[in-house]
Image (cartoon, rainbow, N blue to C red):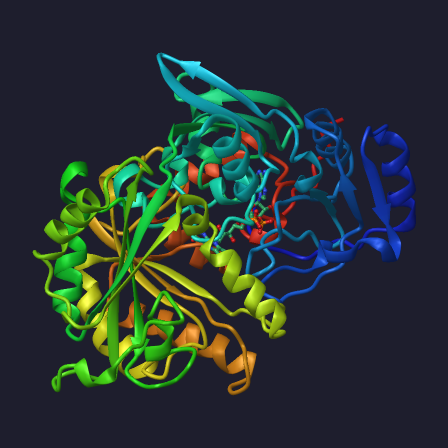
Length: 509
Ligand code: FAD
């Protein structure tokens, strides 16, 4: 059986030369001081030294790397997507890091299956590039997104991939029909719902534990031209959640195409407060309209409706008004703009550019993401948002509902019980103020409080240090997760940065 966690066996110079000579790669092998970002990630909380960074040219190279690691007694292999993890999940201390971005151009191919369009893409492709290529070449686009698109296909599929379209189409893991995977045995395997299905569902949301996703087949739909993007302010949490849940449970023709939400501080704080809400610099948030009954925080429902250039403006206006009239937001605190579909999907790119210009994009990001059952959300708001986080987190505090029936229980993702659950994302940017340690401690305090109160929740993009915590996280899915590990990566070579399993010492030869 595979044990969890454990001591890292130091690697030697002999390892480097033996491995690099045996690989016979089409791509490159780097060791020593030139490995750049291989030991860092977006979180900025962890830093480790890998043995080598490999830039494969394709699937065969990746299989060779995994097989070479399997011939040793201790080497591990981490696929690195774009390194946008928070807690070192894409790292390999003393191991081999595979830079998946070097394969990003591979596999790109449009297919039609049973009259429906699909795109084959590399696991190392950025979603941003998938979007741009699909829209410009075919006027088609994937259906389910993440908010930020400089993430790789393999990186988000290994977690779930969630944004404001997931209430309708499910997460990104519900929008792929076939994968090519290099398992922990170095085998190249094509899998789908009907072919090698255990590997297919295991790899989706599998935290990189069962194989390296080298190709994914993604469902497409016609890309709209334009988006009406709207923000609606609420002072009462119950009204905000009632309307959000109303929208995500309506039929497609009777709702928006995107539904998200966020909590903001009831203050003039430029990052966490009123100025963070308007969508256009010319729009003003006038606090005079905030109801007297409002508390320390306010809520914003963010919705969007797709449309085409050929739609008459009055048609869009009628559709939007018809949807808005049933909602209970503060009437004078409504903000809206029309933007192109690409501009809308790339909206966080602008935030990134701005944050880079201000020098805060590269600061540490002690983020916390939680899936929380509908039954627990009011308690969470009362204690966490309104008390613990009433001054904000230095960045967005997202909260929006998702529907469990749009997720496939056969994948490795674990969710709270009940049909409606919320994603809560505390996207902290460390400006001035509390130290990173204090913010990490506050995250722990929140999780501890959720446990103490018996809230029904699961961490998204989970990060744990002990076997007991991982077992608790997976709950009744733990034995299936361990069995899959034993089948597809029996020596626990893959994704050591998740700290779930300890590298087994058995040599395959
Ligand atoms: P990495 O961080 O490089 O890797 C993540 C894990 O997946 C590692 O364990 C790695 O070994 C493994 N892995 C990487 N590539 C592969 C592969 N090809 N095959 C198998 N395993 C692999 N998530 C959402 O769901 N919705 C959002 O809206 C969202 N917004 C974000 C915004 C920002 C600014 C950031 C930094 C993150 C956001 N995320 C979001 C989280 C994001 O989905 C995860 O952090 C994801 O893992 C990052 O993708 P990556 O390509 O950088 O993966």
